[in-house]
Amino acid sequence: MADPTPVIDDLCAESEELDRLVAELRPEQWRLATPAPGWSIAHQIAHLAWTDHSSLLAVTDQDAFSREVEKALAAPGDFVDNGAEEGAGKPPARLLAYWRAGREDLADALRAAPDGARFPWYGPPMSTASMATARLMETWAHGLDVADALGVTRTPTDRLSHIARLGVRTRDYSFGVHGLTPPFEEFRIELTAPSGELWIYGPENATDRVTGPALDFCLLVTHRAHRTDLAVRAEGSDADRWLDIAQAFAGPPGGGRPPKGAAG
Image (cartoon, rainbow, N blue to C red):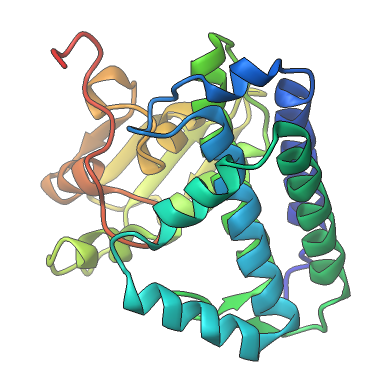
């Protein structure tokens, strides 16, 4: 069984990097619009804090988490937005303190989880490593939204390895959420890491292949950029279809980002 410590460490590092981006913002900057329609920087941080809190309940208080699931089922279209809206209404200093405390409590709980533990979630149950990976993926993706609002370019790191792996592992889920039957055969996926290392998944003799920068693949599977603006390439019809629908997150696909230069 894989040791979850490295991904928990990387989750903390990713959170700290985003924290440095928002810690000194002026109150009016928290209201800057991000690429997510209707969401300001405050909404992005509030969403992360809300999801960290839900994750903490899943790890430490499963009865309380079950009640959160019931709330989500009662308002499936508004639940996430409502959580972000509520948190975004807090004064920035209070919101920042809430996010910091919650993510630290979650990291501590994940480190203390027993070997082999599995936790309930809004989708299938998660292992400790999977929970940390999902939180890292969201922190990175929403951090990009914050950076876009501030006009800041973030330097990618090899922490992307966790997100890339998650994007590969969710291939069949991506087909299923679109009502499509997943391909039977595995794909060969070769991604170039920010460090220059080559990350390889799948058999060498696979017919369908995906290649490109790991950063671009992660942008694709988190829907932070349109496929036409990325250097990810597919060989084979099944792989080509996957790149149109790939997503590393649970829930409905959503609209994604339009191509650069598109009207509206």
